[in-house]
Picture 1 (cartoon, rainbow, N blue to C red):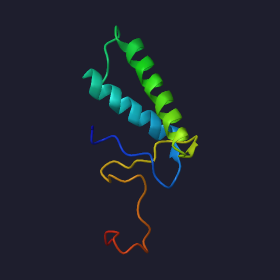
Picture 2: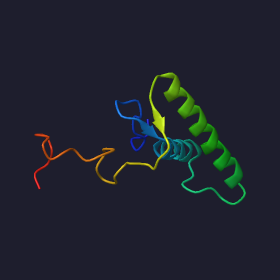
Picture 3: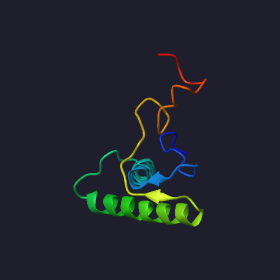
Picture 4: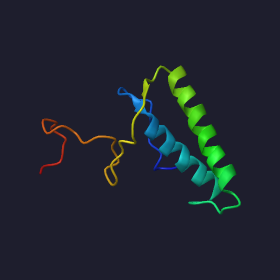
Length: 93
């Protein structure tokens, strides 16, 4: 699996932005295009929409809450949110 696609089945709700970001990464990986040519743009965008819609349906059927919102992923963190300061495994500041 593509390492930049994160697991969205987790205790907190997945956001529509996270689902769309995962769909985009999947289609990029599958197609081999980071950005499609003008000729392929319509098919590329349609694939991203289809993958996002099916991913949302799957998550909802698995009992994962989905809420409207942005992608909460933070570059370089590998986490969707920073750990609270009271977390003993959080990196020291």
